[in-house]
Length: 230
Ligand SMILES: Nc1ncnc2c1ncn2[C@@H]1O[C@H](COP(=O)(O)OP(=O)(O)O)[C@@H](O)[C@H]1O
Ligand SMILES: [Mg+2]
Image (cartoon, rainbow, N blue to C red; front, side):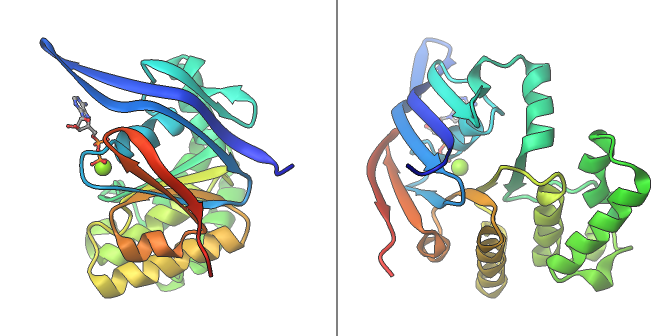
């Protein structure tokens, strides 16, 4: 048996807009083993971001369960899920969301500071992570002084700071040109090779092809789920 890190059963998410209901996710059951690299793909509006937010405990399902390493993420209070995400999950988004007033190093230190890691330890780890993502020459740069690709590298380093059990990424190449996007894909592959489970949501075919497993969504359901043949 493979070592399960994340599972969902009959996951649903309805959005209520006045009298209308949008069934964004309509009964998704998924199992992800530790060490996997999974891409969730499909056309715009098919429910990818909703899925990712449910998997990572950012949003709560209308019904169904999300379990990460035995913990029922869907049943956590806001406070519990914030804490769980800080210690056990990493997130990368299309728009990076770095803190503009902080340097690259300080941005990476932030989740460690929140997790009460000592200053010495977090500076050392933040430096190590900056080197890991190829930005050892950008320690003191603020986000506005970095290119889009560099900002996304800092965001990936920040997401790895507390050694997450799963790294979630929503359209991580969405704001990047093709060349920079390719570099990002290589970096995510490296992160996965080095042991981190990755779930990425994208409509970028090149990014999807780098994943070991591709889950196709359409209208809120999974229509195909297969391992890459390479
Ligand atoms: N906060 C929200 N309120 C209402 N409807 C939403 C909300 N977020 C997403 N939706 C709707 O749910 C569906 C799935 O959206 P989303 O998960 O963002 O798709 P994708 O990421 O695949 O483009 C879409 O029809 C979208 O309009
Ligand atoms: Mg989306």
